Image (cartoon, rainbow, N blue to C red; front, top):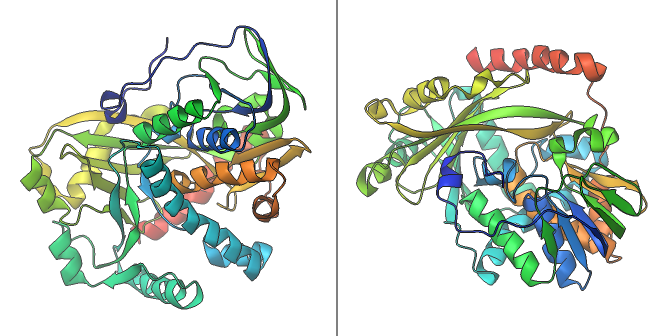
Length: 421
């Protein structure tokens, strides 16, 4: 059976069963396609509501972005609240915000209730590299506290940031005690195990080749269902071309150092928070449970695989922590996340009984779990919260199948220049 993509997470994953491929015709109430966090959460919440559930995964549970991401759990959505308010109005945008905050609470609740061993740690820092970032942080803090009554954030001036992080790169930060980080593959595997205990049936190595409103075909079997939930994101591809036009695969890369020892790791990030800077092409990093530094950076909009070379990400790490020049890199891996044109999440229905969840745009660790809960609510007859997300308008990426990626690359050059200048 195919293994997970080689990464620090795969090397340190908890034991998980190798589930059989679907080789027959089965029936259920709901067929979920995609074994990431969104799909596993949907399967779990549907099964807990009494639905019979079949989940199909093309590779292994957590094989995609859910199992090898930067694993930073943060509030909000990638588009930002101001853009959401322009798209759907202040009240609906506030409802989306409230769901995102509930998503953080849901992660903690699922981890505790199902005893998922995934190294959860509280704390997230958003860091300013330049004066413009600092102004934006102060404005963001005011909006979070005054307009959204989000009180878990506070401003960190330069002296506190530099006492917390062993670098002089950052001039200020926002600290959110409600955010955090975890081992994403172990979290996803834990959700899948919880879904199975609740009665869901999971098949790996079972790509969905096509579907109708009541039937899903796989290479060796089929599922007949009353409802479908599509959670494959960029990996659905030609299986759902109408959805593929609304998202783009963006590559990112992460490295993991050799174990640094508890003291040296603590010196790098004294509060053990997840850290991300405010550049458009951002750096993000955190400590692991075994005292490594996990560092991600760079993005590839071109679709080419050269971005996965570890040297460039190591160079970015040394720009933040030059004192790690003597440290060995033990793991290096890449992967793809899905983005929408407006960076807002894309939820909705293709048919009256075919639901989809995609377009998390880098905010997927917390938002995917609550998205699975929302789609379960909708199928159970309480669609109000799901439908708020479904109201967010989304356009196809311009340029069609041939030109849309070159067009995106050119557009992103503008934001990269803003970082540099």
